[in-house]
Length: 286
Image 1 (cartoon, rainbow, N blue to C red):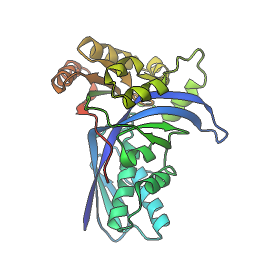
Image 2 (image 1 turned 135 degrees about the vertical axis):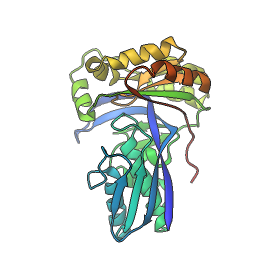
Image 3 (image 1 turned 180 degrees about the horizontal axis):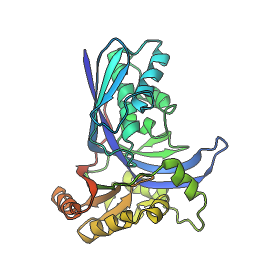
Image 4 (image 1 turned 30 degrees about the vertical axis):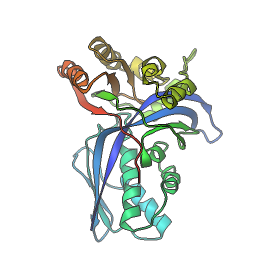
């Protein structure tokens, strides 16, 4: 038996931090958007749980969120996950694109099918919240307002297709580091997440470029000048907007057409970057 799931990347159209919670997580308000760029996660019969990847620099053992997702689903269903999970990566690693979280969500969906559990998506989302703040969103994707520590989701209407160019400098950014550095900041300019969500509800994609905002971008960009340089190239060559996703370091640009996105990618090709051209996608139907 073989089950195949797609793990779609995400970007943050908006990311605000509202304060520290009693549980020491940050209270956030984010506008999350899934992309067509996706990993392929295949589950096949095996004598025991094994996770492999097509990347030498990505471990498939217990430290991998996909492995942890299989163990979690096994405990919940009271079954032993005797499966081989193989992940073919298309999403950049450690990039602010939820690459690990989306693979974990794909495993939750895949084992739900593999074991014929018929769990509703909202149950998988609650399970996913035990693995990480981005996992619940990645279960169904689309466009959502995420609050709490990121696990409380309010679905929004699917955006009309937006063409996206992604560029990741070859630097490593630790999410805990970014949040710690944010806590030291003064005079933070906060994006208007409510206005951003309203623009999506109204189908006013023309408003998006001026409403995008990410309070972690100044933190990461201060340590990595490449982020500002990438944004400048994107905006200078036709992007309607450019912003860092999550804690970075990936920068995304919104282009008016797929051809424009490809042209921006070509302009960036001379730099030492990981680059992809993709588009936004809607919420999963099943």
